[in-house]
Image 1: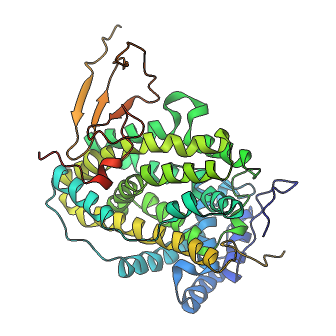
Image 2: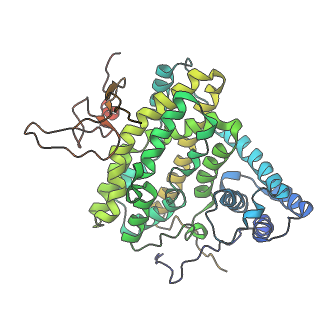
Length: 348
Length: 68
């Protein structure tokens, strides 16, 4: 398929099933939502779903509910953010999603709750991950069309890069808090708006002829891509999952610097300019810094401060590897079949 | 109120780079200033980085160990 920037940038997202339809109606209304209808639809959606990470209706619905908290999509009424009926739907979906993730992810052996042992265990966990390598494919073999699809898939998170982990800042204290802010400050450009990582990615999208409006490609990406983002939002927005969002960030940063060099190499091989490769080149250097701080000072520091959070720190890291591995696997499988990794046949 | 800048620090991270925090000028052997793009930088300790003096994470693939 050919991806072109739409003539009119719009963020009107289309629901993918009856639950999404009911929730989108409620999120855009100025009246309080009807609890009975929403509960019924949520129960029905969860009852009929076989794999929650690839369920289009459930993942898009969660994405919309989180978008209401982030304020990232036009048209969602701010007054509905804390609507009890909508929060109840979110909790029901989150509960099922979290249960699925905990069942899916193999828990690594727990290290001692010291900064050193946790950092070493995280580096070992990430080093042993044998998930599919999207970055090697991009570097060596990806076509121009696949590179565009890769940018479209990434746009869901990266146009708002770092935001899901920022929810954790006020929930931390002491040295883990300082470590997270040290990382996030760099993500947000260190005081320079033109160096905000999300802005560098927006520039990359424009350079590749794509739309940099947030949400422009939500309708194009499959459930698993939304699940990757929803997992971060769920970990970030629930205080009880503070360990998981910290572990997630550590694994995310630790799987970034080398892959980003390969992405940049691949994009250069395909003839993309500096405006597109800047984002990726920046992350080679930035994430080599962030991964050290995230593993030792943030995740290790938090485990030392609150040893009871250690299992969730390791769970969050393992969940990051598992779900981002599934996203990469989805793209590589589609391309192996000579087809698109994006949703096809999306009609109004 | 005047505050003096805190002392710069260099922290070795086990099996990894040196993290440099604070106001320090990096320069080449010829005295040319190496631009810093961020407040905290990681300096290559394994010798394998393609963006020296900065770390690019290659030490992990190379199995670099600092035995600390």
